[in-house]
Length: 213
Length: 213
Image (cartoon, rainbow over the protein chains, first blue to last red):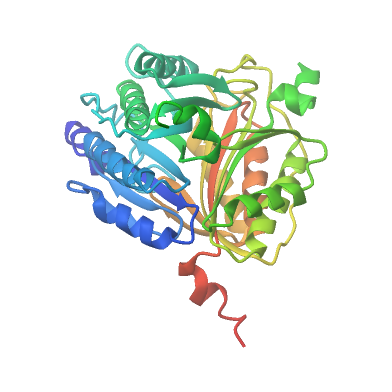
């Protein structure tokens, strides 16, 4: 199974992204963001609900950061819905049997964007049986991921069903990518859902307090 | 544990919803949709990323249908991100121990809205140990849920990481609610994520083919 874990597309490493720009100019902004994002190393497929990107964790994080930073820089209010998945390629129903993984990679590295974001994050380790000496316990993996967020400085609070994150957009995306890949070192099938709010009217007082002259 | 499963708030039955209206008029449209939606029986909390609603499955489905149907009727392009959760109340980390559930309810009933929607759907049964004679197998539960979608007529295709649904907005929300509550009859902690696209420019030819004079 070594070759399957090493090939991100065979292992089903990818993302689905929905960019929603709350402006009459949304078509132009979304097309420009897609155009500005470096998608090298990724397979992209655009649908009417989301865009799918398949490829390795580092390339996905770079692309997600480029795409969302471009939207953030317009100053327009936008939300971004991101689904990350690894270990269950191809379909809603896994083509890969359990035991094909896990896949271990270096922690993906993000970049500072200079744009503030707030986000709600959920992480799902979907293992049916333990790997090696570990027995299934999805809450243990989630605790470890929340620790990752606390160390990164993006953790705000535990809310109903999600973890609230805020801070630099690039650091939020990095936190989520690192936790997803990190849990994936122990669990074959791991998904994560992130909803990001950019340039929210409700962010203005706190987020730009230091920016106003 | 009987009283915990019977009390939807104690059992953590709820939703988080992000409405994104791609128009300069987004604030007005979102406030009007929230105002138009019947939230009786629900606890609502509005945040800067999403609105949380807690309460029973039937009240949640009614509220979600009201809210999104109002946006659909404006004719504006919008996306709606919905997270449903049950069996893990309060926080990202469950307050309820495993074994408190499952909770069994009548299948929630939706309504026809007259608005076309397309959507991407993921369902996560998060059990660590089997209930009764059943052993953990999250893919078995997902197969059963996809069967629910096929019977309802909203199933389109299995895509990377999600199931594609389309049809009447109310039927899509009903399909997802029924599958979520149905899997929840066997598994304590079940979440589901749905991204809905309303009035998409790419829907126009097919979705309104019968509407043009």
